[in-house]
Length: 100
Image (cartoon, rainbow, N blue to C red):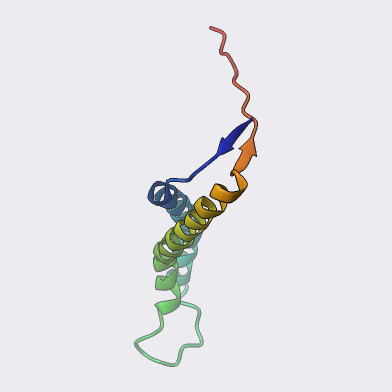
């Protein structure tokens, strides 16, 4: 058994937020394009606001990445504090040998 003693806070947060950004972009950008082509969501009575629904889908991955960076950083800091008392998460790692 091996234990995860500590997480590198910034490195973990950067990695996870990039993953979240990419996943959100894969889903949100096509929806944003469709929404812009279709004229937004409709129902907006303000003349300067018809495409805000579509544009939001392009901005959402960045917002999601920022929020995930902050939340993962907080989670890693809390884990690092708790792991000092509990010993961390135990994992079993199996090494596979490659045959050529």
